[in-house]
Image 1 (cartoon, rainbow, N blue to C red):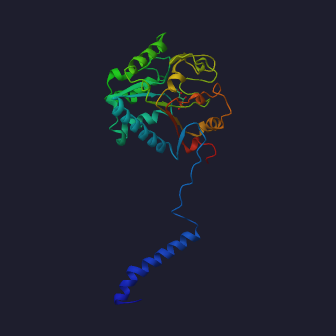
Image 2 (cartoon, protein in one colour):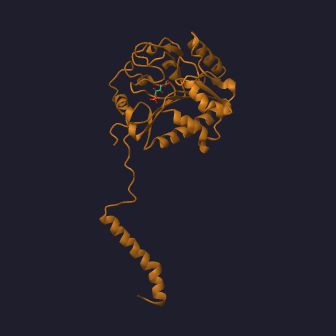
Image 3 (cartoon, rainbow, N blue to C red):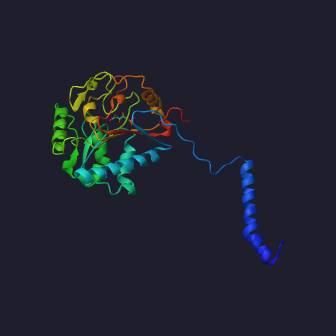
Length: 289
Ligand code: 6PG
C-alpha cells in the first residue's frame, strides 16, 4: 500500500478509477445498461397529431398542460374560454386532476364557459348523468360563475333546440371565425362512437343542426342529446383521450381507416380550421407489449 502523498493520490484518483472500471465490468458481464433509453412507443397513424405516453398519469399530464395553455391563450385573446367536456370513465380521472394538480391551480375558471358534449336523458342526480359527474368534480370546487356553466336540460322535449340556442347566443358576440368552441374533450367507445354519435345512428346524418337527440337500436340506452359533427368540427382544438388495452382494437381500426364514418363515427372528427390531437397510453397502442 503506498504511503504519504502517494497514498493520498491513490485515494483520490486511482481508487475511484478502479471502482469505475470494476462497476463497468460488472455491468458488462451481467448485461445491464443503466443508460439505455426507453424504447420508443410506435405512434398509431391516426388523423391528427398523436401523443403517446407509457402510463395514464403521464398522458393526463400532457393533456393538462395543453388544456391549460389553450385556456390561457383564449382568455388573453378573447377574454373568455369555451370548454366542452365529455363523460366517460376515461375522462373522470382527468377531471379530478384538473382540480387537484398544483400545476393547474391557475386555471382561468372565472373566464371559462363550461359546456357538455353529450348527455344521457336522465336527471342530473342519476349516476349516468355526465353533468352530474362534472358538477360533482369540477363545478362545485371551482370559482366558475354559475351563468357560465351550461348543463343540457336533457329531460325537456326540446333539449337539443334549447342547447343549440344557448350555444349560439353565448358565442355570437365573438368575431366571426372565432365564434366556436375553443377546446373539446372527446372520448371513444369500444364501438368507435364519440360524443353520443353511435355507429349507424340517426345523429350521424348531417342536417345542419349543432345539437341533436340521438336514439335507436345502436344507441346505448337511455336516449341521448349530443353535439353534432358540424359543431364539433368547427372547434378550435379537439382532444381525444383514449387509454387502456380495451380500446386497442378500435384504435387499430381507426389507424387502418378501413371502415367508413358510419361504422366508426370517430372518423367523422375532422376539424375544418382547428386541430385534433390524440392522447394515448401505451396500452391503447396497437402492437405495444
Ligand atoms: C359518454 C360519452 C362517450 C364516452 C366514450 C368513452 O358519456 O359516455 O360522452 O362518448 O366519452 O364512450 O367512454 P369510456 O371512457 O367510459 O370508455
